[in-house]
Length: 316
Image 1: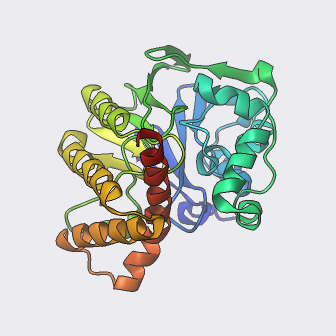
Image 2: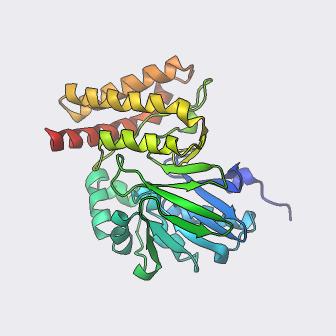
Protein backbone atom coordinates (compact mmCIF):
# COMPACT_ATOMS: atom_id res chain seq x y z
CA UNK A 1 0.00 0.00 0.00
CA UNK A 2 1.33 3.46 -0.89
CA UNK A 3 2.08 5.89 1.92
CA UNK A 4 -0.49 8.62 2.42
CA UNK A 5 0.87 12.02 1.37
CA UNK A 6 1.61 14.51 4.14
CA UNK A 7 -0.86 17.04 2.72
CA UNK A 8 -3.72 14.56 3.19
CA UNK A 9 -2.55 14.01 6.75
CA UNK A 10 -2.85 17.75 7.46
CA UNK A 11 0.70 18.31 8.71
CA UNK A 12 3.98 19.82 7.57
CA UNK A 13 7.50 20.12 8.94
CA UNK A 14 8.17 23.71 10.07
CA UNK A 15 11.48 23.46 11.95
CA UNK A 16 14.06 21.15 13.47
CA UNK A 17 11.90 18.27 14.67
CA UNK A 18 8.86 20.59 14.67
CA UNK A 19 5.70 19.65 12.78
CA UNK A 20 2.52 21.73 12.42
CA UNK A 21 -0.75 19.82 12.32
CA UNK A 22 -3.71 21.75 10.93
CA UNK A 23 -6.43 21.27 13.56
CA UNK A 24 -9.20 21.99 11.05
CA UNK A 25 -10.77 24.50 13.43
CA UNK A 26 -12.77 27.10 11.45
CA UNK A 27 -11.09 26.07 8.18
CA UNK A 28 -7.62 25.42 6.80
CA UNK A 29 -4.46 27.27 7.85
CA UNK A 30 -6.09 28.87 10.89
CA UNK A 31 -5.29 26.78 13.98
CA UNK A 32 -2.06 24.80 14.38
CA UNK A 33 -1.07 22.03 16.77
CA UNK A 34 2.68 21.42 17.01
CA UNK A 35 4.32 18.04 17.49
CA UNK A 36 8.00 18.21 18.46
CA UNK A 37 10.42 15.30 18.32
CA UNK A 38 12.93 15.49 21.18
CA UNK A 39 15.21 12.49 20.78
CA UNK A 40 13.44 9.40 22.07
CA UNK A 41 10.59 11.51 23.47
CA UNK A 42 8.10 13.93 21.94
CA UNK A 43 5.82 16.69 23.10
CA UNK A 44 2.72 18.38 21.72
CA UNK A 45 1.87 22.09 21.95
CA UNK A 46 -1.86 22.96 22.00
CA UNK A 47 -4.60 20.62 20.84
CA UNK A 48 -7.28 22.35 18.80
CA UNK A 49 -10.69 20.91 19.63
CA UNK A 50 -12.00 17.40 20.27
CA UNK A 51 -12.50 17.04 16.51
CA UNK A 52 -8.76 17.64 16.01
CA UNK A 53 -7.61 14.59 17.98
CA UNK A 54 -7.72 12.14 15.01
CA UNK A 55 -5.49 14.51 13.03
CA UNK A 56 -2.89 14.52 15.81
CA UNK A 57 -2.95 10.75 16.08
CA UNK A 58 -2.64 10.36 12.29
CA UNK A 59 0.35 12.73 12.24
CA UNK A 60 2.03 10.83 15.09
CA UNK A 61 1.57 7.60 13.17
CA UNK A 62 2.96 9.09 9.95
CA UNK A 63 5.97 10.44 11.85
CA UNK A 64 6.43 7.02 13.47
CA UNK A 65 6.04 8.51 16.95
CA UNK A 66 4.53 6.03 19.39
CA UNK A 67 1.86 7.76 21.54
CA UNK A 68 3.62 6.17 24.54
CA UNK A 69 6.71 8.29 23.76
CA UNK A 70 4.77 11.57 24.00
CA UNK A 71 5.75 12.65 27.50
CA UNK A 72 4.10 16.08 27.66
CA UNK A 73 1.09 17.86 26.24
CA UNK A 74 1.65 21.59 26.71
CA UNK A 75 -1.09 24.21 26.48
CA UNK A 76 -0.02 27.78 25.77
CA UNK A 77 -3.29 28.84 27.42
CA UNK A 78 -6.73 27.40 27.98
CA UNK A 79 -8.89 29.15 25.37
CA UNK A 80 -10.73 26.29 23.73
CA UNK A 81 -9.30 26.70 20.22
CA UNK A 82 -5.99 25.85 21.95
CA UNK A 83 -7.12 23.48 24.70
CA UNK A 84 -10.57 22.11 23.86
CA UNK A 85 -9.19 18.74 22.79
CA UNK A 86 -6.77 18.34 25.71
CA UNK A 87 -8.83 15.90 27.78
CA UNK A 88 -9.68 13.72 24.80
CA UNK A 89 -6.08 13.71 23.55
CA UNK A 90 -4.71 12.89 27.02
CA UNK A 91 -6.82 9.73 26.95
CA UNK A 92 -4.84 8.65 23.88
CA UNK A 93 -1.43 9.64 25.27
CA UNK A 94 -1.21 7.32 28.28
CA UNK A 95 2.24 8.47 29.55
CA UNK A 96 1.86 12.19 28.97
CA UNK A 97 1.58 14.90 31.59
CA UNK A 98 -0.45 18.01 30.86
CA UNK A 99 1.67 21.16 31.28
CA UNK A 100 -0.30 24.35 31.88
CA UNK A 101 -0.04 27.79 33.46
CA UNK A 102 -1.11 27.64 37.13
CA UNK A 103 -4.09 29.92 36.44
CA UNK A 104 -5.36 27.38 33.90
CA UNK A 105 -4.75 24.11 35.74
CA UNK A 106 -7.97 23.97 37.74
CA UNK A 107 -10.03 24.62 34.62
CA UNK A 108 -8.49 21.62 32.89
CA UNK A 109 -9.19 19.46 35.94
CA UNK A 110 -12.77 20.75 36.22
CA UNK A 111 -13.77 22.55 33.00
CA UNK A 112 -17.27 23.60 34.09
CA UNK A 113 -16.45 27.31 34.52
CA UNK A 114 -14.36 27.36 31.36
CA UNK A 115 -17.26 25.90 29.40
CA UNK A 116 -19.73 28.35 30.92
CA UNK A 117 -17.50 31.30 30.10
CA UNK A 118 -17.07 30.15 26.51
CA UNK A 119 -20.81 29.68 26.08
CA UNK A 120 -21.28 33.24 27.33
CA UNK A 121 -19.00 34.47 24.52
CA UNK A 122 -20.11 32.20 21.65
CA UNK A 123 -23.63 31.06 22.61
CA UNK A 124 -24.76 27.49 23.32
CA UNK A 125 -25.35 26.40 19.72
CA UNK A 126 -22.05 27.75 18.40
CA UNK A 127 -20.17 26.34 21.40
CA UNK A 128 -21.47 22.82 20.79
CA UNK A 129 -20.78 23.07 17.06
CA UNK A 130 -17.24 24.40 17.51
CA UNK A 131 -16.04 22.55 20.62
CA UNK A 132 -18.30 19.68 21.68
CA UNK A 133 -17.81 17.90 25.01
CA UNK A 134 -14.80 18.98 27.10
CA UNK A 135 -13.19 16.07 28.99
CA UNK A 136 -11.75 16.68 32.49
CA UNK A 137 -8.14 15.67 33.17
CA UNK A 138 -7.00 13.86 36.32
CA UNK A 139 -5.25 16.24 38.69
CA UNK A 140 -2.32 13.85 39.19
CA UNK A 141 -1.48 14.16 35.46
CA UNK A 142 -1.31 17.97 35.52
CA UNK A 143 1.97 19.92 35.88
CA UNK A 144 1.91 23.66 36.58
CA UNK A 145 4.68 25.94 35.31
CA UNK A 146 6.33 28.91 36.96
CA UNK A 147 7.79 31.93 35.21
CA UNK A 148 11.32 31.12 34.08
CA UNK A 149 10.91 27.47 34.98
CA UNK A 150 12.56 24.63 33.07
CA UNK A 151 11.31 21.21 32.05
CA UNK A 152 13.51 18.38 30.67
CA UNK A 153 11.87 16.66 27.70
CA UNK A 154 13.85 14.00 25.87
CA UNK A 155 17.13 15.49 24.64
CA UNK A 156 16.32 19.10 25.51
CA UNK A 157 15.24 21.45 28.27
CA UNK A 158 12.22 23.69 27.70
CA UNK A 159 11.85 27.09 29.36
CA UNK A 160 8.57 28.78 30.22
CA UNK A 161 7.81 32.49 30.11
CA UNK A 162 4.57 33.70 31.66
CA UNK A 163 3.21 36.12 29.06
CA UNK A 164 -0.03 37.82 30.12
CA UNK A 165 -1.79 40.43 28.01
CA UNK A 166 -3.91 38.16 25.83
CA UNK A 167 -4.81 35.97 28.82
CA UNK A 168 -3.66 35.75 32.43
CA UNK A 169 -3.22 31.98 32.00
CA UNK A 170 -0.80 32.28 29.06
CA UNK A 171 2.79 31.14 28.89
CA UNK A 172 5.23 30.65 26.02
CA UNK A 173 7.60 27.73 25.52
CA UNK A 174 11.22 28.38 24.56
CA UNK A 175 12.91 25.42 22.86
CA UNK A 176 16.55 26.36 22.28
CA UNK A 177 17.30 23.10 20.50
CA UNK A 178 14.49 23.68 17.99
CA UNK A 179 15.58 27.31 17.74
CA UNK A 180 12.42 29.19 18.57
CA UNK A 181 9.45 29.99 20.77
CA UNK A 182 5.92 28.58 20.80
CA UNK A 183 3.96 31.77 21.37
CA UNK A 184 0.30 30.75 21.39
CA UNK A 185 -1.43 34.12 20.96
CA UNK A 186 1.14 36.33 22.73
CA UNK A 187 2.92 37.31 19.50
CA UNK A 188 -0.24 37.84 17.48
CA UNK A 189 -1.81 35.80 14.71
CA UNK A 190 -0.85 35.38 11.04
CA UNK A 191 -3.33 33.34 9.03
CA UNK A 192 -1.94 31.73 5.90
CA UNK A 193 -4.73 33.18 3.74
CA UNK A 194 -3.60 36.70 4.67
CA UNK A 195 0.07 36.30 3.73
CA UNK A 196 1.24 39.03 1.36
CA UNK A 197 4.23 39.55 -0.96
CA UNK A 198 5.94 41.10 2.08
CA UNK A 199 5.46 37.94 4.15
CA UNK A 200 3.15 37.01 7.03
CA UNK A 201 0.42 39.54 7.88
CA UNK A 202 0.63 39.72 11.67
CA UNK A 203 -1.81 41.43 14.02
CA UNK A 204 -2.67 41.22 17.75
CA UNK A 205 -5.54 39.33 19.29
CA UNK A 206 -7.34 41.18 22.11
CA UNK A 207 -10.18 38.77 22.82
CA UNK A 208 -12.18 38.65 26.09
CA UNK A 209 -11.83 38.63 29.01
CA UNK A 210 -8.25 39.26 30.20
CA UNK A 211 -6.89 41.66 27.59
CA UNK A 212 -4.36 44.06 29.12
CA UNK A 213 -2.46 46.27 26.64
CA UNK A 214 0.44 47.11 28.95
CA UNK A 215 1.02 43.44 29.74
CA UNK A 216 0.67 42.54 26.05
CA UNK A 217 3.41 45.02 25.10
CA UNK A 218 5.72 43.60 27.80
CA UNK A 219 5.08 40.02 26.67
CA UNK A 220 6.00 40.85 23.07
CA UNK A 221 9.28 42.30 24.29
CA UNK A 222 10.00 39.26 26.47
CA UNK A 223 9.60 37.01 23.43
CA UNK A 224 11.95 39.16 21.34
CA UNK A 225 14.42 39.24 24.24
CA UNK A 226 14.87 35.45 24.05
CA UNK A 227 17.13 36.20 21.08
CA UNK A 228 15.32 33.69 18.88
CA UNK A 229 14.26 34.86 15.44
CA UNK A 230 11.59 32.15 14.94
CA UNK A 231 8.18 31.74 16.55
CA UNK A 232 5.56 29.08 16.03
CA UNK A 233 2.13 30.67 16.43
CA UNK A 234 -1.00 28.68 17.00
CA UNK A 235 -2.61 30.90 14.30
CA UNK A 236 -0.70 29.89 12.10
CA UNK A 237 2.66 28.26 12.70
CA UNK A 238 6.09 29.52 11.71
CA UNK A 239 7.10 33.15 11.34
CA UNK A 240 10.64 34.54 11.30
CA UNK A 241 12.48 37.80 12.03
CA UNK A 242 10.61 38.52 15.25
CA UNK A 243 12.50 41.71 16.08
CA UNK A 244 11.43 43.22 12.75
CA UNK A 245 7.79 42.18 13.21
CA UNK A 246 7.40 43.33 16.82
CA UNK A 247 7.05 47.09 16.09
CA UNK A 248 3.94 46.47 13.97
CA UNK A 249 2.36 44.46 16.80
CA UNK A 250 3.09 47.29 19.22
CA UNK A 251 1.64 49.83 16.77
CA UNK A 252 -1.53 47.80 16.23
CA UNK A 253 -2.05 47.35 19.97
CA UNK A 254 -1.84 51.11 20.43
CA UNK A 255 -4.17 51.65 17.47
CA UNK A 256 -6.75 49.19 18.81
CA UNK A 257 -6.69 50.87 22.22
CA UNK A 258 -7.12 54.32 20.65
CA UNK A 259 -10.03 53.04 18.54
CA UNK A 260 -11.62 51.59 21.68
CA UNK A 261 -11.48 55.02 23.29
CA UNK A 262 -13.21 56.59 20.28
CA UNK A 263 -15.89 54.04 19.37
CA UNK A 264 -18.87 53.70 21.72
CA UNK A 265 -20.20 50.31 20.60
CA UNK A 266 -18.81 46.86 19.91
CA UNK A 267 -20.24 47.07 16.39
CA UNK A 268 -18.57 50.41 15.69
CA UNK A 269 -15.27 49.19 17.09
CA UNK A 270 -15.43 45.98 15.06
CA UNK A 271 -15.94 47.99 11.88
CA UNK A 272 -13.07 50.35 12.74
CA UNK A 273 -10.71 47.41 13.41
CA UNK A 274 -11.70 45.78 10.12
CA UNK A 275 -11.07 49.01 8.23
CA UNK A 276 -7.64 49.39 9.84
CA UNK A 277 -6.59 45.80 9.09
CA UNK A 278 -7.87 45.95 5.53
CA UNK A 279 -5.89 49.12 4.85
CA UNK A 280 -2.77 47.45 6.27
CA UNK A 281 -3.09 44.21 4.33
CA UNK A 282 -3.81 46.10 1.09
CA UNK A 283 -0.75 48.30 1.64
CA UNK A 284 1.31 45.11 2.04
CA UNK A 285 0.16 43.95 -1.41
CA UNK A 286 -2.65 41.46 -0.71
CA UNK A 287 -4.76 41.06 -3.84
CA UNK A 288 -7.72 39.17 -2.43
CA UNK A 289 -11.24 40.47 -2.87
CA UNK A 290 -12.90 42.58 -0.20
CA UNK A 291 -15.22 39.67 0.56
CA UNK A 292 -12.27 37.28 1.00
CA UNK A 293 -10.46 39.66 3.33
CA UNK A 294 -13.56 40.36 5.40
CA UNK A 295 -14.29 36.64 5.68
CA UNK A 296 -10.76 36.04 6.99
CA UNK A 297 -10.76 38.89 9.50
CA UNK A 298 -14.36 39.52 10.65
CA UNK A 299 -14.49 36.99 13.49
CA UNK A 300 -11.20 38.22 14.95
CA UNK A 301 -12.29 41.84 14.59
CA UNK A 302 -15.51 41.03 16.46
CA UNK A 303 -13.75 39.16 19.28
CA UNK A 304 -11.05 41.82 19.47
CA UNK A 305 -13.73 44.50 19.77
CA UNK A 306 -15.46 42.56 22.55
CA UNK A 307 -12.18 42.18 24.43
CA UNK A 308 -11.33 45.86 24.05
CA UNK A 309 -14.76 46.97 25.27
CA UNK A 310 -14.44 44.66 28.28
CA UNK A 311 -10.98 46.12 29.01
CA UNK A 312 -12.37 49.65 28.67
CA UNK A 313 -15.11 48.88 31.19
CA UNK A 314 -12.50 47.72 33.72
CA UNK A 315 -10.25 50.76 33.44
CA UNK A 316 -12.93 53.45 33.03
